[in-house]
Image (cartoon, rainbow, N blue to C red; front, side, top):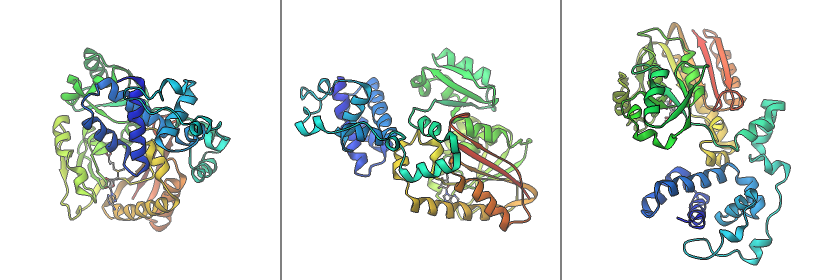
Length: 383
Ligand SMILES: C[S@@+](CC[C@H](N)C(=O)[O-])C[C@H]1O[C@@H](n2cnc3c(N)ncnc32)[C@H](O)[C@@H]1O
């Protein structure tokens, strides 16, 4: 595909996302319907769509609107590329710009240049003070790819050597014994022997740090109450925990048995009607705004509303209350979010503690893209 044809594909995909389609599903649909697109084309279109979603507000200002065409026009202007070279109307490229389109657009205002909804900017400003502009700037960039060495199969050094044999270069991160940052060859990952044999899993640095901080001993009985795809359950099982997994939407766990088998981990699925009994550790990796991961899911940044956030916070409080009923005396409750917002993190824990005097806060840590990788929050509460 020519650069113009890739831009035309990105325009079509952005228009579908504007109409409400989730970005990832729309990219998959486009790739399936576009047999002519090679892997390089698919990657380039994907990068263009995701980069544009991360910078949607500033590119809309530059392009004079938020249709797919205007957003791609904004992207070209941002990059200093002459739009006429892409909007050329030849072959599979987009139609030439109209007179109106070619005069529309202006530099973004300071608020638009942050690429956040205004209400989120206010919340971040309140929560992060002087770090706020840097946090916003980081969320405009692509996130690095992180792997977790599966300790049940390999150390980080062994995983690194195995990956290198398949042309995937990584750097071991000193902050966590399992963490590898991919520095080259990421697109070869899923075809690599290290991946097939379960030596590594995709997982960001910050949840790896959180799982390592839980200091498990072999046989610790863990209930993962929001197991979803099983990222945390697998990380904890690899550290020797006996994990029972449950999720309010059991279908989200459908790949977990296959993933556990690949990783050589034993994870028990609780009865769909709900888990029973007491555990040494209950993990509540609750549904949240995802604001710490907006580099990876940039469409979510524009979809979150104050009303959704309040609903999420209610669910978080309800899950914490339920989680507490499964913690044995002397046991721990680990509350986790991938959010940067205080209202979903510290404030949620404070509310829980004031209603549950039998728990005390042991540790709490908010990680941010400025220092770790994705934004992430962990609080450990002891009963
Ligand atoms: C952040 S995701 C979990 C991610 C998962 N722990 C992982 O590491 O891959 C939150 C999960 O909570 C589940 N959930 C939503 N409401 C819930 C509830 N009331 N009780 C338990 N789980 C719930 C969602 O279905 C979703 O799978």
